Image (cartoon, rainbow, N blue to C red; front, side):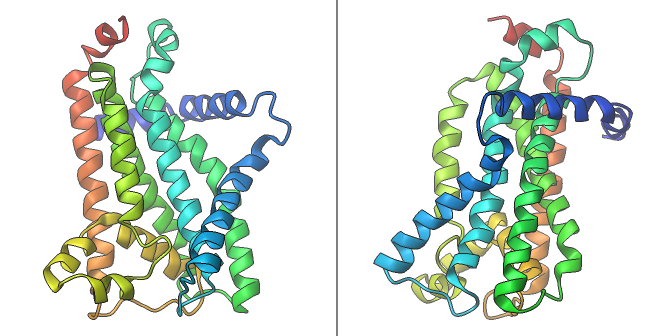
Length: 273
């Protein structure tokens, strides 16, 4: 891992250029350009608000429901878009890989960076909206960069892992689509942890709380939304909320890069057909 970290630092300029190339390609000939990075998840949040708040009358006591939705939809969008694009990125860039001499994992890394660049302005808008609507900032806002870093760590680990798997097993993309859909609805996007706790038996609720994306989303809400309830033993300890995503991020990164190291000499062969 030390060698990989040194390589990433040494090639940081290349990663940045690859990320800019990804953004330019994505928004080429699109009238609204990068505005879609905010507009698309915003419209998704509006649709969810209409369905779950207006029609189904779901609401949250912790914070205005639309803010509750926005913190989930935008952060999940960064993760999902990064992972799905990175999974097929080695195949999509196989001509570049053949012509250049750099580690394959720089491609999925640049995809995550491109989506992070897309995500940050939208996150700033969410924070400004939350400050206006809630009349102040969260006391945990100072920890938001660490939350973003942890989120990126998880995304990078999974992106490298699935990009390597995809070059050999193309079916993994369809499995991943189904898995992401399951994870999305298994994460408190438009319902509260209180609702889950009152519905599930204690054992199943503990299993539910072991989902790292539950902790990840809770950390975002704590950092952005003023007055959002701090985790208590009623749901899970604060250490549990932090520890599960952190452990998952470290393990996925280690496993993803170890898988790359084991298969790096075979990747070009798989990309040739």
